[in-house]
Amino acid sequence: MSTTIETIEELLAHVQVMEREAYECYLDLAEQMEVHNNHEVAELFNKLAEDEKKHLSYVEKRVGDSDIPHIAPWDLKNFDDSGVNMAGAREVHYMMVPYHALKLALRAEEKAVAFFAGVVSSSNNQDVRKLAAEFEKEEQHHIELINEWLGKVVRPEDDWAEDPDPPVQPT
Amino acid sequence: MNVEAAPPALNARDYKSDVKPVWCPGCGDYSVLSSVTKALAELALPPEDVAVISGIGCSSRIPAYLNTYGFHGVHGRATALATGLKLSRPDLTVLITGGDGDGFSIGGNHFLHACRRNVDMTYIVMDNRVYGMTKGQPSPTTEPDWDSALAPGGTGLRPFNPLVIALASGANFIARTFAGDPNGTARVIAQAIKHPGFSFIEVLSPCITFRPDQREWKTKAHAAPVDATEDIGRAAKRLMTDDGFTTGILYIGDREPFALDDSIVAKGPADIETQFLV
Image (cartoon, rainbow over all chains, first blue to last red; front, side, top):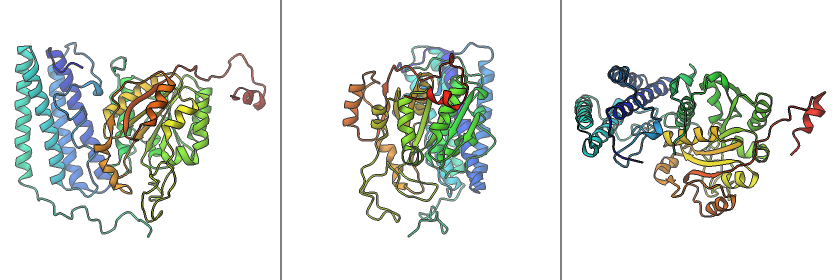
């Protein structure tokens, strides 16, 4: 598989799929937390989903009537060894706290930065590099915001996952 | 490998129902649900043209979480139910979802014969090597030395090897994926659906509640260094050195799928039964 992106259309198609993946992933995680009565984290994941939805709308507006290629989620290109899946999305716990959720979001943003940086450094098309650099800058800004947010939430104690009423395990 | 398909008319999330999954957060089954919806979306299959059949267990709840047709059936009998459905409604895309206990213990015999019969459907087994819903009993795929309160010291029994059984019994498409790679799993599911005959996918799907050790699977699962083979002997040879964590498509066969003979007008159950002989 080629690891360069050489057209604006291909780059926009990638961004569209990535934003949709992030949006749907955060919605799924919010639902998981709601079902398990972890409302604080559910609210946070819902907020992250809302943010991703705004990004998705922005990208879709930017795509407009352009004829962009269809890309299946499994055909997304990546420029590091982290694969095509959203970072850390399966590493959740019913007793997780906002700090964990923000750390997960931070990893997702870092992955996005790595993607755009990879496009900037590998594409031969100047327009693609310019647009990718714009997206990279935006993702960097998200990282700053999440780091700021992380500074405002309580760091979990070491025993955060200790459940006084754990799943019944016969002895 | 790309799966050729028209751009999706629906997004993956459009295939989900309003029923929220009750699995434990972190459970691999969430990823498999996501993979199934992504595959259906990429194949642009209308929800009303798809039926998902399951047995009993955590992973067998999937039909409720989809807005396709679904049937949450009897323990271990999902492949039998699905066979009946596919033969009477060949126009439907039929998926079977379930776990290792449902598919290989209670439904073990049905599994063998579903592979032999080779009806055109796709069986996705979420293998977590434990009975999660009933709180942690060893299943047919559990390691013999897995020590737990319910099996002190382990069962000492040789684990069932689903891929070996599927290959020996005649499945026409055999793969293993890891739930921690939902997009890779979605790709394989899409290919399995498109391939004629009985397709079998073992998805390593960690149970983080009763097998927290399975969180380490993300470091154990590894892609096969070779592409799928159409040679059954070569596939068997590869399984001889398989460590249970190799992912990818193992085997793609070309057996003609089983279908009912439309020219026979059934006058009663006996006439129908004759067509099911293999």
